[in-house]
Length: 127
Image 1 (cartoon, rainbow, N blue to C red):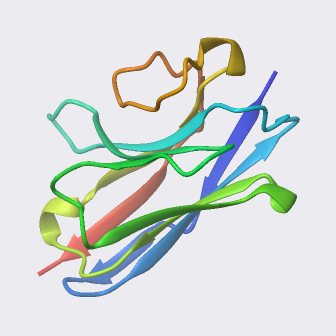
Image 2 (image 1 turned 135 degrees about the vertical axis):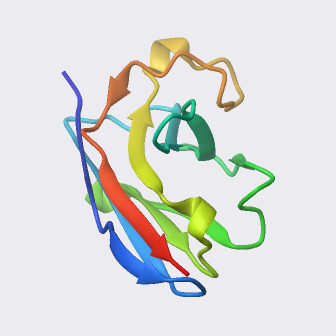
């Protein structure tokens, strides 16, 4: 059973930066996808960024392109989300999610059925 633990959330003023971390336990890092999603109060969950653990496929939501960067450290079984130029509309609970390698078919997308989820870390951006 893969466990994901997020950290790095907090409160920051608009224009500031945060780096989220997602540490995976017992993750083989066979080719698959790990992604970041977020959910604001009374809004649907949305994909933010996802990365192919074995290659170079990276997908970003249009709303974060140029501001957020997803990266991974395979030696630490950790995926990061560097968030720069934060805006109040980035305020949300951020979740890390992983896809079983058996569900990976050569691409990463927010629409895939990620089957492992972390508990989330809150990001609050004030004006």
